[in-house]
Length: 526
Image (cartoon, rainbow, N blue to C red; front, side):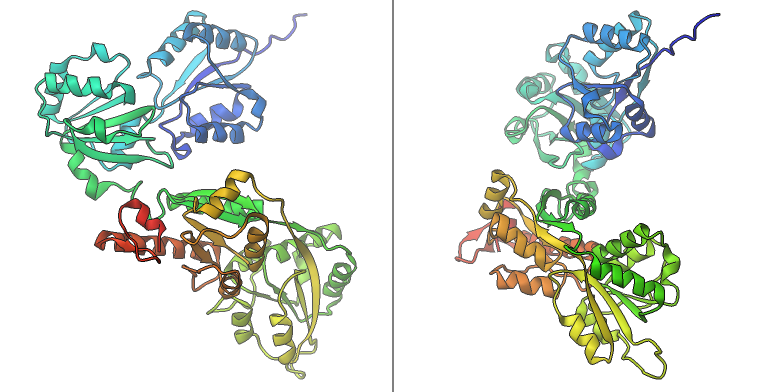
């Protein structure tokens, strides 16, 4: 009887693209998820490292390598023979990378089973993200050794079309000399792009004579586009042209809810920073909620009014505790204060009967809430599950309309611990371009744990009650959506940012002290 052989693993060389995790292919995602070990080197952007940790689910498997390519190739081959699956993450595409090719050759020499998963190169990404398409003819060069470049070859490439060069910033002076030695005109257009597809991608346009000076402040690997393709940038660039591109936006909210906002902000080009200011906890005593759930089952209520996603979650968790499901809402009418809360209800397969069509707030809901009719409404009671610090507007308004209201504390909001010192300093010194407030409690708690945002920080509030609280704390409210929802809040901030950019394009902006300023800094002053 023979024993079963241990399966042989594979080494997958994964091209990760230039930095944007959204450019990872499905095959690359699968390779990272399935890997027993994930290796990367210092050139891999932090965003891709974090993505690898999320996909793999085990931080201990994600390891930085600093050994030689041949040693690393042998190490990975040995692990594969022991049955482990290896994912070796490589910036951009694998084959233009000299060190990656050396690792692949070393793994092949060890007779390892390996795959190479292609990724988008820096040159391809810059052509699309920075708006400089290749045209009919484009030559791409990845510089591993500046001394190996032939000046006449480069000059000939530029004569025939655009040239894209990927190089380290330390090689730019030598590259300029090579271009001029090859007969390339010093006035030829050059665009330099750093952190391609990243949150801080930035492109400067200049000429062969001046691109070294224009690239001051860049670090690491950059992409140069030389020739006719540069002229298309002003019309075709989109990545850096998004309305909140480069804005550092503070999100004071619960961690779970902040994650949803961060995703939307990144789509607008912002750099979100999540600072939990509140934590949601169950009520101190469960008796009220227990009676409310029993009342729901017994038909005690005609309406249930949800004022937040947290209130929906609190009721649903109590349902699960008692083995109930959506059928417990049978015969009960549901009202929601806004679309975000209504979406939370819809997740459970239920469509709310009443949502404000205008202002999504307590006042807006009261405008459309029907008065109690003692003849038509056999049951005259409303269940209002909400936070422990909610205002009394809804209770008094429903009572005026003839309804009996069971005002129940469904959850408590408690203040979180203060953020790190550098975050507190950034909040108070204007290190954030904007802050998004989604409730009055986020305003109170942020000020309580970190201090007031600097006066040049743009303040956006989700609704009138939140805006009133911000004003009470001495903050200037710059943006507020018509509808109280996260998507509309972010859209309102984006519109405000575009207005600022338009004002900047028209001329210098005056600060409150009368000082005239212009350039990118002006966007952070009112």
